[in-house]
Image (cartoon, rainbow, N blue to C red):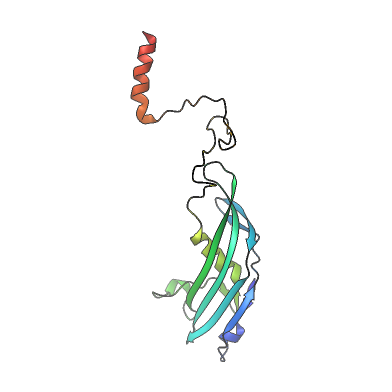
Length: 175
């Protein structure tokens, strides 16, 4: 979604208060593509501070389907977006002073809302997602979801720290 900033960038410096829809239907990263199953409208305020400095505030909430880190079942994960940016359009992103945010989502007189929020979603992305705290994961032999049932596989993978004990028992079996 592109938001026209001409009112706030003109000499009148009229504050913009708008509610817009997020165009993003899925969130793509190098790790994969995740479906956005629910998204609230984005409330945006853009106001002039001084010279070519502006404040951008945005609030919204999305719900994304992310696979559980143990069993790979889809989990609904809510991400709250509460953005406050302080940009100086007189300087390029390479010349930014401390306290200013990059403005690569502003092109001329337009604010790319999806691009700005993409960065915020990436920052707020959960580091670990579990379907439940006691998730048993999947069998490392056959791939069975252990939350839904057991399998008949023998778990031959031992903790490498126990290899000395395994070798000791192997010697007893041979005698």
